[in-house]
Each structure stands twice: as structure tokens, then as C-alpha cells.
Image 1 (tube, rainbow, N blue to C red):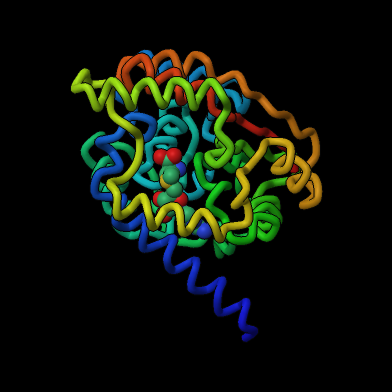
Image 2 (spheres, rainbow, N blue to C red):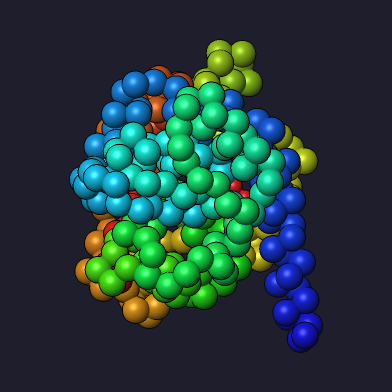
Length: 265
Ligand SMILES: C[S@@+](CC[C@H](N)C(=O)[O-])C[C@H]1O[C@@H](n2cnc3c(N)ncnc32)[C@H](O)[C@@H]1O
């Protein structure tokens, strides 16, 4: 194994360990779990717009975490498999499905090497995975491999490195109000220790300069996907999330470069 191979292996382990700890509070945070019917409807509308009703088709929710997206796919009538490499995430995903009486299959696995057969899924979906991938091109080729010919990929992600001016302004205002004791709403994410780990990981992943939609779309084309479409209209979701984030934090989030990309095998 080369020196860089060892470095990559170490980074993957760090990412897995980071999310295993984040699993403890993941579902308490807006932006992850859904806390209102308005937000649920907005997500369902977005998924329906891009991949349609499930009608029993097979969907793979990669890096499913606690299965927020898996449940939406189940709501739409897909036959859903959720996969993640962090066991604490999957424990919560399994418990949630049991509580809600859902038949979602959960597998422990790496999005870069799913161990699933060729040509089996109608749809592959992931949310907030691409930005943290060590080798996104290998992943995209793997996702294309497990899709049936003509199957759809749907990626929900964002650039969490390059902030827009508006996002910085709203974030700063929220910070001031919070320091004055005005309660500007919860800041999404981890406490100070985990935030440092997050920064360190982010500085070493492939998209360390931010996962811009254009760069992700170009790489999907390189992996062999076609009919690639970028949709940055997440306004209905951001509007609904504002009730949980608070106005300023909600506006800060809405001003970030967030997007959906769909592509066809
Ligand atoms: C920000 S969370 C998103 C969880 C879920 N998709 C959601 O939107 O609620 C990122 C998830 O990606 C998982 N993850 C990161 N890299 C992965 C990989 N290569 N294979 C499988 N899971 C991965 C982490 O364990 C974590 O659960």
C-alpha cells in the first residue's frame, strides 16, 4: 500500500468515527430530522418532482444516517434500502423504522464499495454525502454500476466551505443576537470539539474547497451519467425549516449554495 493509500484509509476511519459520535444528537437538529408537516411536504414534493412516485420501485438511500430520506422514499412507495457505514446511525435508523412500523432494509456498507449486485436499483439517492467523500469519482462509478440501465441518481448537497455574502451577513446577525441573549435559533452542527474535527476532515476530503454543483455535475458526466440536471430551488424546504432554525439562521442557510442534482444511467 502506498503512503497516500494509508492516508486515505485513515481519513475514512476518521469520517466514520466522526459520524458515529454525531449520531447521538443527529435527530435533535433541524436540517437533519424533519420537525413539521410543512417541511415533510416540501421534501416529498421535491422528491416527487425529480423521481416520481415509487410504485414499488427499488431505491437505495446511500449514507442514510438515521434514515430521514429513507422514510420519505418509503412514504412515496419505494422499496427502500438504506446504507451507512456508521453503526450508531444505523441503530437509530432501525429503531425509527421499527417504531413507525416501516419495512425498510438497512445495510452496513461503504458508499464507495456497496457490495450490491450490478443493475439492481431504479433510484439511488443521497443527501449530504458528496461533500464528505474521499474519492467521489469512484463512488459515482459505483452508484452507476448498481443502477439499472435508465435508473436515476438524485444527489442533495451543498458547498459548505464558500459562504455567500448574504449568508455571512445573516450568520453574523444571528451570532450578535445570540450573544445578546436574544436567542437567534439553533446553529446547525456539532459542539466546539466536534467542530474542530469537522474542520480537519473537511480540509482533507476531495471537495475541500467546497462541493460546487458544477464540479459535481462534471464528475458525474465523467463517471458516465447522462441527462444531468442541477436544481437549486430548495426555497419551499428552506421556508419550512425557518420555523425551527429561527428567521436569521434560516435565512443564513437559505443563502448557502445548496442544490439537487439528478442524473440518469
Ligand atoms: C450529514 S450525514 C447525512 C445523513 C443522511 N443522508 C441525512 O441526510 O439525514 C452524513 C452520513 O454519511 C455517512 N457516510 C459518509 N461517508 C460514507 C461512506 N463512504 N459510506 C457510507 N456512509 C458514509 C455518515 O456515516 C453519515 O451518516
